[in-house]
Length: 482
Image (tube, rainbow, N blue to C red; front, side, top):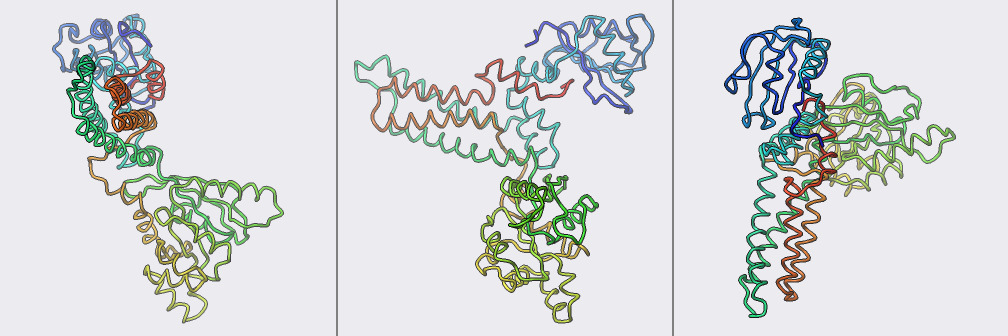
């Protein structure tokens, strides 16, 4: 870990041609170093939160650019240290020269995430809030942004610290009893202590249940298109993206690999995957490899769109695939209703009924899908060719199980990441150990040991208990300048 005694410099904006760029200098010598570069006002004596117009010069005294210098004195800065932010024109060469001038004046280039790491070490943020900074920068959806903002505001920290405070109070009472074991005195009520820890355990379980939601918000929702060859998966893929991304021909087996693109679905980001058609027999080894990858895509997806062909009965394999779908994570799509409607006038009338959920379900049953499966699943009849009912498909997809819950979450959304989950799992194990010891009238020493384990584990979420290796791992994923 870099010493806090150093003064660091890095661009706080992407290094790319732009109207403006910001170069941040932070550390004990930030004002002195910035003053050596700046021509305009005496930065070392400036009040905090004052912006000054002037010029920056390189080591040889040559003017580099006309800038604004913002002075932020400790502890009222992002890092909690003296900080100066130079706003210059966004030429990458200019940013590089300004960085070089700051290094020549005594700063060093910051490591990735070092500004946020210093904010944590200086008590400006706890560790979960520091992680939220990276999540907020990387958020690709409105729901993910809201979740990151809530974590940055301290919503997760407040919940975990509240639980930790409860356990600390109980632990103090139990430890007070340890000194009076021989007198058979206890300063806590065992049934009440068990009830209190059970309530904490329930709250921990509720947080653990958000791990999957947190993953969806951070990584996006994986939606896989499944079905037999030539049911129109690639056509639907292109229609949803409004772009000819996948190759479409009249020949089955055209798609040989998983094709991925990003789609916006309300407040969520969707990773849409077009896959090879599933069939049991094919002489083509490349297609067989594509089918294997398709099965993996379907198994790992958060939501499956199972396509069927409206112009023919469903095969036994297709009916089995529909029966195996999870109703909370799937939509059955009856495609090619345009081709079905073109057959005759009766079919056209039938196709008009497809626009309703009941009509789509009835059409599935007519094509051989079991009535109980059609009745429990979300079903939509569409035409990938003409675009008919595509808005209904998107609406149905948005209302599938967990996606509906996430997209309708309010601003109080709190989720955990993988590191939080590991810490909470250890807290849960310690609380269960405490409960078992309490039931069997274990001595106060044993009860205290279980509670200490839970307190330490909860402290890892906010960074009360954390190792340098953990910090290195967390901040290594940050961008330079943050």
